[in-house]
Length: 56
Image 1 (cartoon, rainbow, N blue to C red):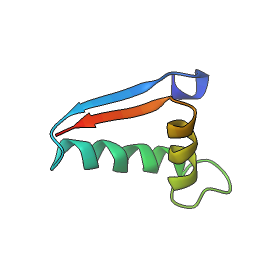
Image 2: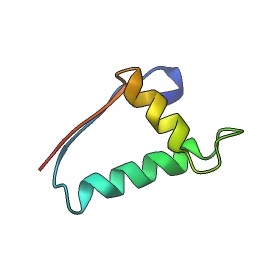
Image 3: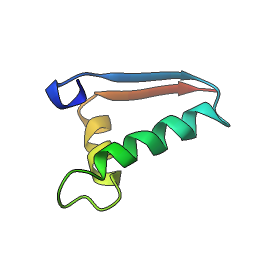
Image 4: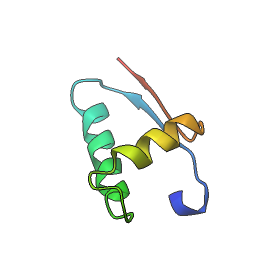
């Protein structure tokens, strides 16, 4: 779904869930050629408004 343009919104715990979701998304991004750790892909998702967090 993400590959088809889905948006990801994360709301909740900043100490456990927030970092775990971000790590999982980086692992997904790392499967993209030329993005070793998925950070570039995740940053592009943020810039495009397709990944947003509200963690506390």
